[in-house]
Image 1 (tube, rainbow, N blue to C red):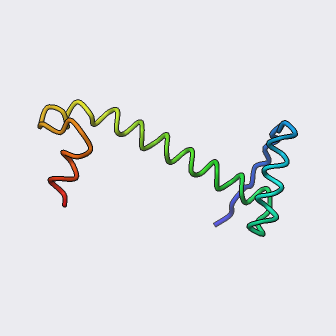
Image 2 (image 1 turned 90 degrees about the vertical axis):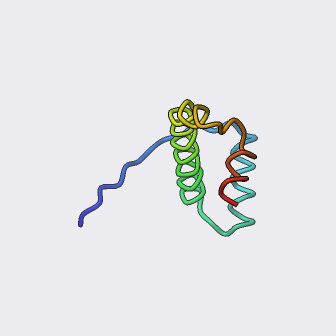
Length: 75
């Protein structure tokens, strides 16, 4: 399978650039690797929150009003 890579240019203020560079040094990962991980994490979080919003009315109709209600039934 052939994968096409895209290039994305992102402008960082100096403070964020310094934080990113320190994280690169600490973890031994490249800027690109860390940014890709951050984007994957954010996309996953947004997808989860979207799913949660769509499912919430059905959960509430069945009496699941809090996270504790869910944990109680699955634990």
